[in-house]
Length: 328
Image 1 (tube, helix red, strand yellow):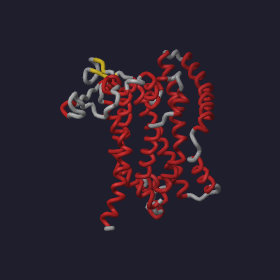
Image 2 (tube, helix red, strand yellow; image 1 turned 135 degrees about the vertical axis):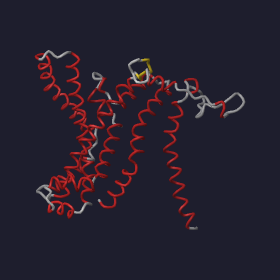
Image 3 (tube, rainbow, N blue to C red; image 1 turned 60 degrees about the vertical axis):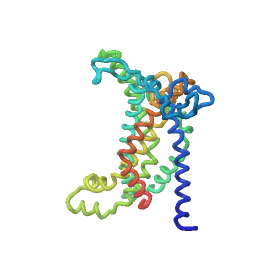
Image 4 (cartoon, rainbow, N blue to C red; image 1 turned 45 degrees about the vertical axis):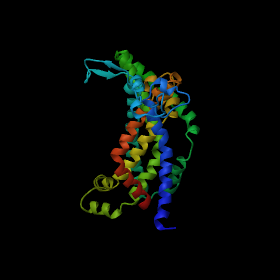
């Protein structure tokens, strides 16, 4: 068998695997542009391009924005930038919630994981090996085993802080809207803290591998030139470890954006305005068991931010993964 044929077989296998994995995404996008009558066809058709004479005719294709219109719920608003605004809860409320949770949690994860990874990489102290093994072990604990404890801790924190907020609001004569904003901010802070803690162990190991790959001579040279150890970290080490820090941020962002169970349990049904977009899509299934084009449109909109983020940062992301695998 020739060398070219040997190389062709694994390439063909990877192409087939990628096509199989991407087909559900492609089908979801197609369904999101269908109308209700085409979605309910039996037997179903992937492309709504059939006629009485043929099963597929390109000029006869029927694609509509019905699903997206029901998700966006556009309404006229003279004060808006374009004279209209999207009032659908997924666009106006739940996607911004997920964006806040993902960005804030990923930021704290990157900062704390960077400091912890640098400490494990550069300093030798008593219990260092035990802490590293313990952090690695935490990544293998299933989330379900922690949810009950997280729920009880969340309830305890609310019982401890919410009455204080209400007393301060009453003494300062805050409006009901201001009081609600403060309590909602507390719940958002709790969710961000939970997400930060859940994804911290894995991020520490990612960042540590990049710090291990940076020679210590660079820090020593910076200290000799007059930098303090902290300045050497900020001005020399951190820029070189930026790909690893960015990788931790991206992985954390994607995981938090796609997270469902923690938000569903901690927020529940009493704080609908704090739900993430994944919980909102889940709630959408109850009201749209037949209107699959609406569900598909919501799924496509949920995928867009992550895809855009990946496309914008793919070069740094791939270089970070390769560098971490080779040098870490």
